[in-house]
Image (cartoon, rainbow, N blue to C red; front, side, top):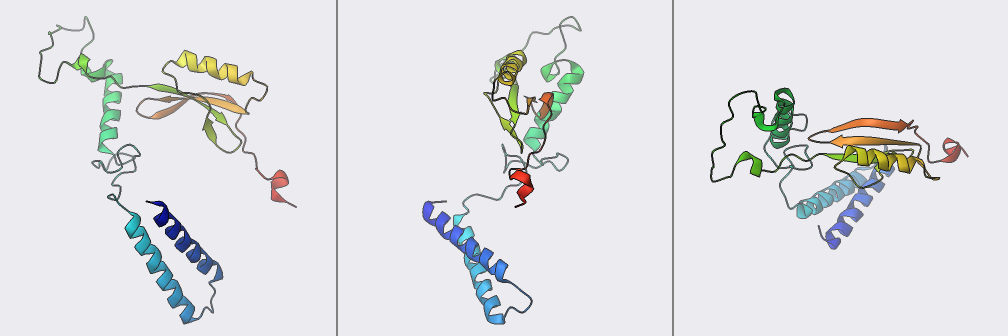
Length: 196
């Protein structure tokens, strides 16, 4: 969407908002027809602005990817990755290969795509977050080592301007909160709850 389209669409939606505020039970038909024209104009501007296909999944990584109806985000690619991760936890190894000493180790055969060890392994990150009083917010660079992330958060907690609470989130194929320091309380941004 270019700047001109963005400006025109914003103006059309603001006009619709003004119509919504002025709507009442005794609104005349002339005003309703004017609203109808403004809605059509806004829809035409949206049609001009949309360039891609509508998303088929709720996945941010693969919005137009293949659909798996059983997945919580409808994404077949991410659900396959999650299933492989669950299976590897049960089998004890990534990809289902037996552990050393559990059976006859067959030498991997070469293929045009390379051996399994040549393929990238799934990545995991430890994400430090702080409580801002309203939401959890990223407070540092995600790290690949849990100990390093915990050391970073303990240093953050010792700062004079420390946040109310910190947490460490493990990102693998899903997000899992591993540890929380402090108590995250929701703080009203308005003093006295907005009472004047």
